[in-house]
Length: 91
Image (tube, rainbow, N blue to C red):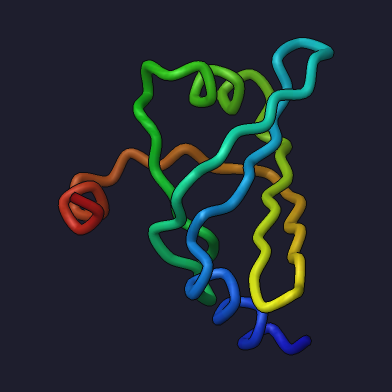
């Protein structure tokens, strides 16, 4: 798949699974994509949730999208962004 096909699959199938760690315990939960583009994969969560605390302690994560009989796994380092303009755009 090309990068554009991967981004298209992600945007067309916005429910994905996010894997983080809590100490030595893996944690996986369903999330909702805001958008995936050349700038990255953007989703949101409340800063008070366990997932936000886990990201602060260890930003390494894996995301898993599926659709059209395909599965995309993206592994990397998450970045917590506090951007009022982006927050307004999301809400």
